Image (cartoon, rainbow, N blue to C red; front, side, top):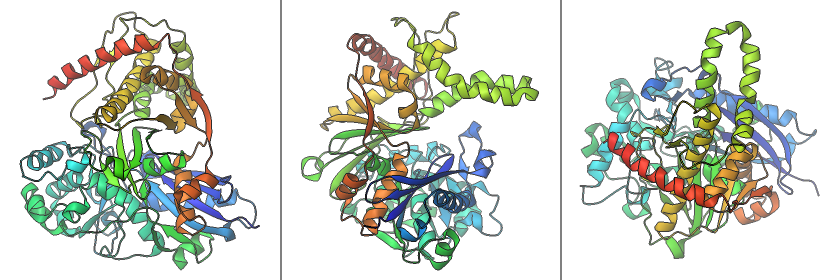
Amino acid sequence: MEHSYVIGVDFGTDSVRSLVVDTQTGQEAGSAVYFYPRWKKGLFCDPAIQQYRQHPKDYLEGLENSIKDALKQCPAGTAARVKGIAVDTTGSTPGPVNEQGTPLALLPGFEENPNAMFVLWKDHTANSEAALINDISHSNGKDYTAYSGGIYSSEWFWAKILHVVTEDPAIEAAAAAWVEHCDWIPAVLTGNNSVDTLLRSRCAAGHKAMWHASWKGLPPNDFLTKLNPVLDKYDQMYTDTVDATVPAGTITAEWAEKLGLPADVVIGTGAFDAHMGAVGGGIRPYSLCKVIGTSTCDILIAPLEETSHKLVKGICGQVDGSVVPDMLGLEAGQSAYGDIFAWLRKLIMGPLYDLMPEEKDKLAEVEGKLLGYLSKQAEQLPLRDNDPIAMDWFNGRRTPDANHTVKSTITGLHLGTDAVQLFKTLVEAAAFGAKAIADRFIQEGIPIQEVIALGGVAKKSGYAMQVLADVMNRPIRIVNSENACALGAAMFAAVVAGVHPDIDAAQAAMTSGFETTWFPREQNVPYYANRYEKFKEIGAFTEKLYK
């Protein structure tokens, strides 16, 4: 039998990866990464005010180049047998568009305006707007944050919109609507040129835009105009949403020719990277799937009949069908994970690059080995009760209980604290933050039957995963695929193209399985349990500083 192929496209924070996958075996036939050139230069971003914007041209160029490069790696004839494409993206990453669904940054006069671009998930310029949304939600009679964990975040859809349109009257006047990155790419590939017919992801809408079927869509006009009258025109942006097994349409002739693909390739509706990554990682009911990258997203699915009556406090939402159809999808996560260690690397190496510009190539080689070296050295350190403790809130706190005004605290530093000790402290902080999330699910009546980890950190840092197992006192199963998010997107592509009847069948045929399992070391569990209690005490103290 002639095998067919699908393409999963994973838009990450720094780059986009396209993965060509055999629909019968799950074997990866080709893979390519494209780094966003404008983002790499730091354009349109200002870390001092936590502004992170991405130009839609980075996405379009990345989409084309990564798919074409991935197909070049495949055996001859593969492109002709591609049946579907599906995409996942970061989120909430919304951007302003005109009535045709074109991002304003692609229009004359807006090309260099950061407010006309996509507002990346990690942008926290909307902290005050998120606080306003929470204040009004909790005094309005009807709490539209109820299915978003009860706390609205500055990382999410409405806070970002409110910030941009009040800051920039030109954007407010020109933006007919706002679209998530995961909704825009399928529209581009299918030639959808109207915001009225653009399909909206259930995943994005339910978790980030306060969409819920019980109030017939988005929050109503009276709520939005209490936030600011300028939101009046957005209350009917959309009412319906779809899960990621619904096709968005067929590829346009222009994109089929550009990519060298057949004219009948089916395009799936998009979703967020962690949600598709959880599917690619083999998520099952009550598996806690940790998608670990620059930040973490923790995804859990549960049968509706067992959990739909629960409202889990302080998470990133619970949405029917946001991960897979007919299951409640629950999301949590940490706003910084890999970013914490990138900060440490920059802290150590940054001055050396400044002092020794002529040695930048050698320094880059050293930098590439730094975290591996620190991991090996940290493994040898004794476990002492008075070791430094840090909070994982380097980019604020996503969950439990979103608060992006808080900052990290590191306590217990002394003249004997070196880079290795500090690295150990940061690894533990990330693990303690992960345990806080798991504890919240359990406290709210959502059991956890297993923990799955995927992503580059999960595969490459055995030290971090061992500490995580010790802290959580649970085995941590590591997904075999290095590209689980793109693989999950490919599974959805196989379903929308009709190759597999549903996600269960796609997972069964295309899963990569697990590489290894890290088991907790019994002798270390009491040590970390004691330090976790200190972590919570320091967190409570730290939070008071930012009230």
